[in-house]
Each structure stands twice: as C-alpha cells, then as structure tokens.
Length: 174
Image 1: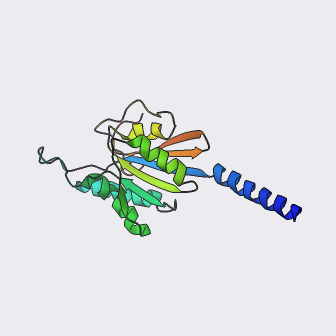
Image 2: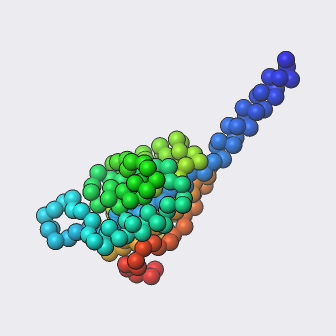
Image 3: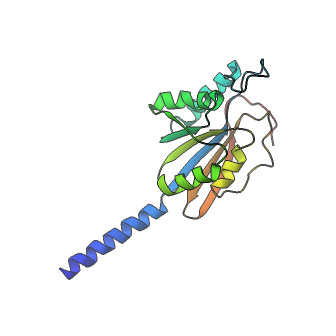
C-alpha cells in the first residue's frame, strides 16, 4: 500500500510539473484597415483593404490550431478576427482594452497549452505584448501600421516575442 501511495504521489507531481511547463502562445495584431470616410464614426467597419487583410490573417493562422480569439468591443477588431473564427468554428470573445494586464494574467494562468489570437488597436498592441512579459519588440506602432503580427510564447516565467508581417505590405520595413 505504501508503494502504491508513493507511486501515485510521483505521478501526480509529474503531471503538475508537466502542466506548469506548458506554453501559452499568443498572436497579437492590430485591427485591419478601417473605413475613414466619416470622421465622426467612432466604430467604423473595415475598408475593402481591411477585409482583405482579415482574410490574409485567417490564411496566416489557420494552421496554428487557435483555441480562442479575443477582440475589443469594436466592429473593426471583431471583423479582423472573424474570418479565422468562422473558419475554425469558434466565436470572437471581447475584452476590455484598458485592462490588458488582467487579460494576460488570466490567459497565462488558465490557457496553458493553448493558442490565442488577440486583436487590438495601435495604442494597445505593444502594451498587450508587454503584459505577457515580453520585451516591446519595436519602438512604436503608428496609425499607419496594419501588417505586424506579434507571436508571444510564454513558458513558465519566460516570455519571448517574434515579429513578422502578414498580408499586403502596408508601412515601413523597420
């Protein structure tokens, strides 16, 4: 009986250690290009270029086995994540853009082994990357930057970020 308890304890501790070592992989993007013909519209749809970019994002990430997609409560962020969500059969969840740290903390704790897409805004994307513990990979994201794709991998207390571009080139070649 004593050996059985020791073996059971070793298995349970091994499982806990394995769970602690699982990574959380998060892709962070800015919403795609939006309509700008009505400056008073605070929640515009995507422009034709933005719709193309949202499709490009879907093609870029469709093989990554995304488990969840988060977007702010604006049409442009939801519509950026929608083609991928539709393709893989999940819904887009909303998050508060003013509380990226809480979102990151929640995902680090509860989404071990998961792949997540977060769609934000030019003034929040780099803050989201940092909220996961990664170093800000570029100096700034301007209002003209739409093609950055930040891939953050969190394992234990370590976070790394890779930067790539997707879709039609839009801005600088930093």
